Length: 463
Image 1 (tube, helix red, strand yellow):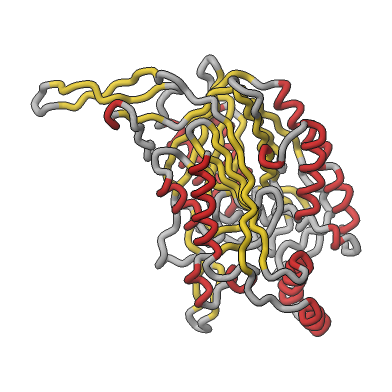
Image 2 (image 1 turned 90 degrees about the vertical axis):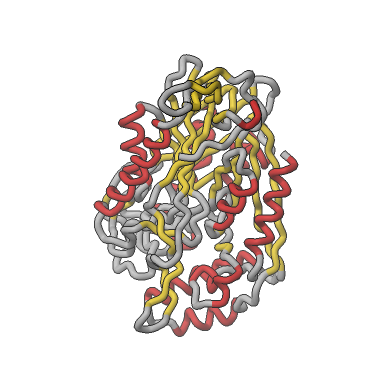
């Protein structure tokens, strides 16, 4: 586990980035109804969900400064993603009820691929009549979550530590017999193995919440799975909550190029194993953390068979109560994307179900873009005490979080994908030179990821 190095005491101390303030937590069940249209995969042979693997949740965390009136609201959702109109509908309800500025709110789906696609355009399909009522319930559910979290807020400390988890693999791979690019395990490229754990403790030092931030596509189960599921996130939560007695929130990191070791399987045992692996890595990181508001200082030499460097714990002089937020609408150039008429013609001529799924996704992107030649890639940056939380509406490659963590090495950086809406992949520039799925389907031109890294870093420096 890596501790960010403190700059105090001649850099001879270890400490966790921390925030002290009022913290509220709440949860609600949002499991979709069985029978809802749930063809998430082009390879699926079924249209509706036939059962539930595990409950699916919405979980809320409210952070309030004890020194100012500033507050930040995070809601995590066990869902694939939220199209912009749905995200806006929920955010508008929350902002109106709680008088929030846009940058104060993060609405963060987990990206589980065992979720319904949640698109109202599917209303005419088998089970599609259940989509609108399900989505219509979310603004009210989210408002009650925030109200409950605020009402139950307690004086606490949120501290962070990095750990390691080997669940994720790079997924920009090639099928050797055909030379086709595939989303599969690429053992020739190292994957980002960083897990970031946030520990929420109350005034008595008891752990009340655990935040797990990890980048890995929730695709343990694939097209043959017929169960609604939070994927590996549910089993991970179960283990963490059983061991700690605390509420666990999952934050899905920059996983555009990452997949779990066991992917696309039919049965939930793959999700169970993947979830346990992440849970144990998170618990190991949690177990290695110093007590809240403490640091480890170099103290003296103790003469023994060899001179021993003795370190000992001490209390921090103060813990930051700073909360700041900024929305950054990054404008990016778009690559040539097929016109609407071309896509519609291809849909009309299509005979394969998997190809129809690809074309329908392409059409949804085309309709979102209209005639634009540039696109907006929204980024939200939070400063939470000594740490940062950064979210985007898209799916950047893991290089995004690696670069930000390298540049802000004395802090910790949590990165959240697909937050406050859904845009598209943000691949590395080199990915555009190959038969690569994310580079092929995204509307963003090569070099966009690198530009977003620079603009995000600048915003973080301002905070």
